[in-house]
Length: 200
Image (tube, rainbow, N blue to C red):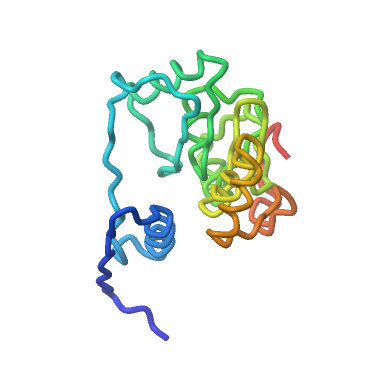
């Protein structure tokens, strides 16, 4: 079957719908072509300056070779200054944090294709211990996932660690989650022969 050049999809946003049903599906489809399906925008509730105190900062992936704004970097550094704040980095989100300079010495996962791109561009922060053979990694206050779907695995592990286990089990059943451990990573082969510095 040949992929059509344009495919228009309407997303029915029902009251109280499950966000992951929309975001996970549309993002996966969008990964096949930027023109294939427009991403669902996420509207912010606060600016960097007005954000109230938080327990966790979730950092999603962006273009691995792009830079973040000064305001974003300052927000991350402010959160990092509080040792109680946890950081959850999904996909290239860990490359964002590494660029800001807060991951030095930590063991961290990231998107493998993106890591290869950053290595090839000579922009890999080698003070970070990049882990190339895990879907997700926990190292102290830093939780990182290797890719988009690995982010769901990371969230599931986070839930198992911090939430009531009865609730976790019910959520697993209702969402029909298949639990994936951190290893083995079926995509570890992508980084075979790639120099990750202190990583492995």
